[in-house]
Length: 308
Ligand code: CDV
Image 1 (spheres, rainbow, N blue to C red):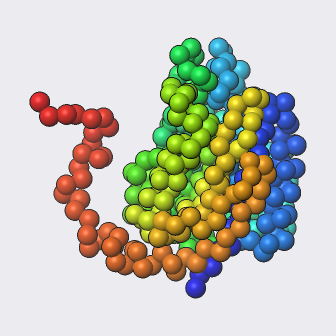
Image 2 (tube, rainbow, N blue to C red):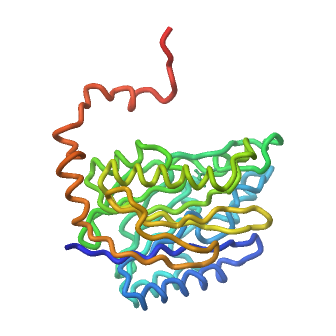
Image 3 (cartoon, rainbow, N blue to C red):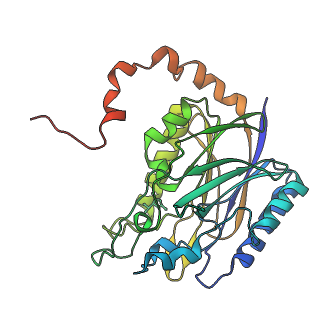
């Protein structure tokens, strides 16, 4: 048995006016709850430190830089690292990263129990659009504010297992989970901000959005024999509703724990990483069963090329 007690730390809404300091205080409160529950790892959402700012259009792209972190930890986030090391609890959270070279990424980090950053992931699959789109019910300008990640999908040895990260829209792509799976991943942690309405098809509301969310997480977990911990930023931010659906999926693809609210909420689950072994040694023993001679298109062709 290799047990990792995971705390999925869902955040309720964060308004535009809320300071980093106020958000970090909420995150610290969840971390203290996680410590009281003897958790090993606390996982927060995508862009955890602010409102989901890509819904706002800034004509001058640089005006959005107020939402980006130039250093990690910085003055506002240092208390998270101090508390993590004091409590001997590992953590992962997402933030908007502005590098010294002027690059903008949607980033997540993995921090060990000593409070040291041991892993960084930059979101690869960037949804949305670059320019203001009046045809949409709301804007989703991630393609305007972020570059696609340049670090691939690494994994790290941590907490006695193999841990990987992805972010929100990445979960909808089987390629994400398979690349992590090919490195033996046993625990995938991810945060998300998912509007409860499709901006290009308003009839597609919460039920269908939640269905697709569960479908992708459960498939990714089962097909790669891994735990998945998915953590929402939920509720109504400045009039825009994001769905909850924080959940833990086991390597059989079953939802084993989930949130009940759209507020700050801790979902705790014991993940025995040895439970990943059966799938990895049988139906998803990749080395025995994969036929890479037939998969070339996946890595060589981005779009659809129908037959003539
Ligand atoms: N933050 C996201 O990546 N959100 C997307 C929405 C736009 C569909 C998601 O895949 O949940």
